Image (cartoon, rainbow, N blue to C red; front, side):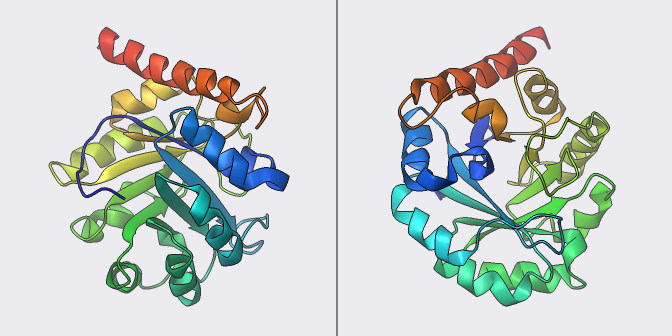
Length: 234
């Protein structure tokens, strides 16, 4: 991950919606079509009701990702696997506040390994859960669906949380990422509230493929256009 911080809107396609039989080519395709980060959803079948990929797959994907490998750990407890995911090449490692009893210690553990640190909040978790680690982290991830599955509908209740979080962060160099139900219909409102990293799965990958990657580019441009339209209307 580059050292320069900025709040320009970044698109981070979730490969949860990609073709799992061609994840390497899929990562190259979305990067070629203009994505900013590659979002990797890790689920353990325990903290969330689904099971996806682990450190070995992340390590296999690392040579295919030129931008930012943004790894979202939906696992509990996360502490035993921090080293494995950092060793696999995660640039940003995001853990859930709800998945640990010692968030400050966990943040320090990730930081000591040299990765950027994100903290995720489930829809029912208030922004206050990150107040005391804001000076130690690089990103807060607001879940705008209940985690565990792709393709869910956006929870509008999270827009106000994003705005409150933006005020709480102040001038700290901390990104606000939003994950869940992001599309051209919802992207503008979360950016207006203060988000600057948008995770989108089906909204990016729908209709395209490794053989038809231009569709991915069209889908991402539609999301960016919605954000720009909202900014112009403000």
